[in-house]
Length: 458
Image (cartoon, rainbow, N blue to C red; front, top):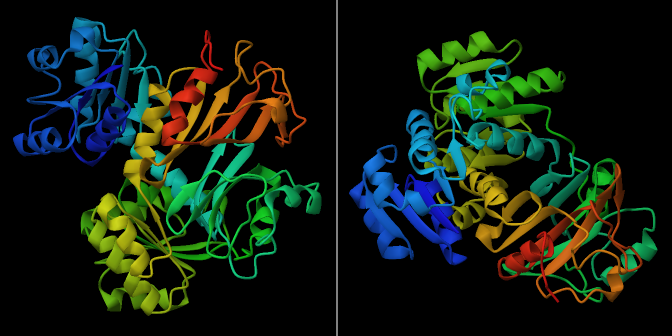
């Protein structure tokens, strides 16, 4: 696939890195010569210094032959115009734009990006995506990652196995016998920072992180079996009143009336604007690194600090300070992937990567076949994929136990006619079933082949 990426920042670089590793033909455009030089030196891509919306720059980057343009610069208007130019002059089939300003995304303006107006096929709003991820993590304390599939009927969680976890040291094949009415499947295990797809004879050990697929009603019970019965936070301090912080606070106000929120924002004008937009939450003006201000926000009694500023270092330090002052837990936003491992050593409980969230949304539209959703995990080492089975799929018809599935993938759940089916050996996949699969990076191409219209796979 030939792809043009406008923007060589954290998101653009991450997308280019992933797609180039899969042998796609990638061109990256950015006005910064320094960023382009870095991407040329580190990735097998072509780099072009210039404005991503200018026709001559797009032409030089190969827009006439491109299958897709991904406009991910820092400026919404540049992204919009880049897609328009790619459509009008070069007839690029698929156009994806990152849009941050919420004014463009109001429901009553939903026709704005239609083919008759601004022909953009996919709009990605990082703030909304990240905000929803933050809310899911707040709602499920004890998980280090969570994503929903099949119209939110299937939940996949990354859960750490604690010492008192009832399911440790038990072969996975026995779990279905011990808990026959629990529709949960262990899809992958991370042990000592190594990720692998388990076999039925494998066991979970204390300290493992298990990726588990289950139904929405059984999420709490599944967490309890892994030793996690932490109560949901009801006293939350949010550091950072940008689009994400405001969205999280407003949603909590609307859906969790018993939860008390205090928000810290360093910009006075923004703080006043936020205060006007919130009904019950307290807004404090100042730095999240100001110990006196944290104490004024009663951080010592808080269940959770959520650090959502645009500065990774501020987020991480705020998380550390909050814990030292008595806050029970911390959840921080980290853009720079180099900081992810450091956060663990600092005692930060959980993090969210906007870069990873955005890349996952892009991959959903890059993947071939009937792919409905993609979630990238562990810095791209694997993906959780929801795909629709076709009549031609090699998965259809035979019992799962008789399928010669490639190494590196495991089926976690099947969604059929409003029902979630646990994938035991006797289950047969039918056409139009939606299948949730955990696949290592090496197995992703094979998953794509399974769900393409015409194929000879096995």
